[in-house]
Image 1: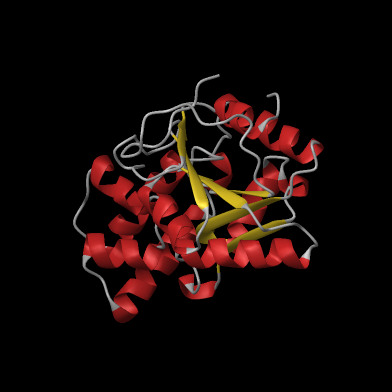
Image 2: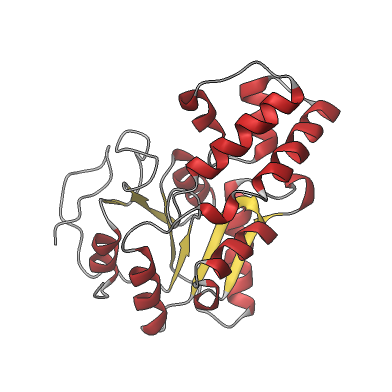
Length: 234
């Protein structure tokens, strides 16, 4: 299996297996295909709030970053209007969020890593309670030693913050966090990992692409490629 270094780095085959002491996963666009459910809830929220309609491509800008940032940057909402938009979206998202399927091969990758004794965590900007519900619905929650996400009001939901919290929780659970790696599909995954001083593997099966994932330690087209990189058979 040939897994190349991320765009902007020397094109070379990485030494296999690449052996981190713990693995962190993003959720939206990495473990689950959440965009349809998110976009449906956003459309309902925009209609209810009387906001100008946005195209599906424009609404995709909301997928990944904290919601408060999405409504501020992409709808111009601040203060109480921003808080109302987040709350309205979440009310609708509660009805759609479990309709987000796992990507093909993701369950096999997570379970293979878990069976191999690799400490696992989820680091997501999504509301932490929602993330747990989604993982439980997908049958994967028991594979993760920690789930780190945003608190009420999107507090602590930026990528570097949830990665930092996930690593802290893994350490508290007794995991070796001397060399963790984060797996994610967007530029804020790469940036958040870099802020915390850890490597990021770019998940090309999600919503990103090689250009967006510039700076990732490696790029993988499918979960099985991540398994090969990490030394487990998927």
